[in-house]
Image 1: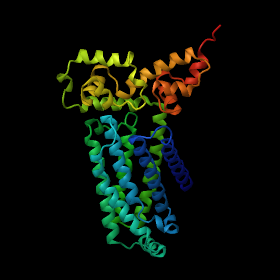
Image 2: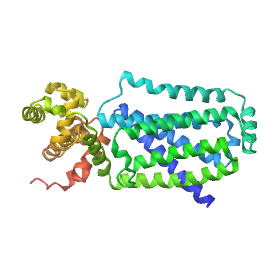
Image 3: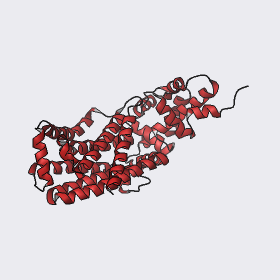
Image 4: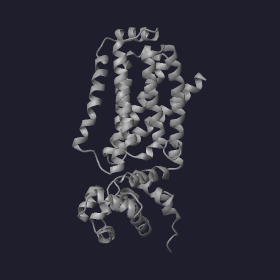
Length: 360
């Protein structure tokens, strides 16, 4: 059982690290940065839980209380990421208010980093022996309050979060499992014996790691669920019919003209706001037009046009590099081009080129 625990946690941490590093590919934006924070803090938090439950933490005293910033960064980043996906925007200056709790958490952790290593080591040993510390109680309560506040805010983004269907909404299930573990561990830290909390953390982390691996497996096997879920959220979350304020038919026609005649999708910095500005409507009106009238999201809509032109260019230019084609149609990296192409055509650009009949 112990070997299985070590193995499953190692695999889970490795997957989180790989996902974090994968976000470094392509042109960075707010979502990439948030995903790096999510998966980095997630792997760090998993490592800390493993070190705590196996008592290896005694040998690494500088990691003492590292779960405080890791949990706060993780929960805050998850909320911001989901909010940006739903609103189809980048981070704004007023979003900086969400960093206040992160600054406090990092400040508390910094205090422990500058303390003598021996002091932390002694207090860890006393903690394992059953001694209670008031400051640990305060910081764990602080961590639990912040983490579960952001879990609640994430939940409030849409009523669909009430469903914890593992197949359709594995990400929400994973968040609930992780932050639930933090909350239970916090209560245990404060009111129960340390041996009990060690065993509880051991069990919960094993379950969480298995759940995380299943979540990633589902994501790779059924990637369409994430897109349909986000689109479903956008439809239900709409509280105001912005389309009533515009000429829908005219706007839809102008949108299609921009795509077919001006080929605005070739702009690799094209955003929902930028496209809405060209149509002289608000980003909310454009978002509703795409979601409710065309039954798609902004990213899927743009990707469809980019891939359509890319297919024509690949067919007409057998010797042209895929990188140059990717840049011409609006992608900012080969990775995003290949991912987008496979979502649309169920094959990579290279496989599509190989499937074309040879010209005679």
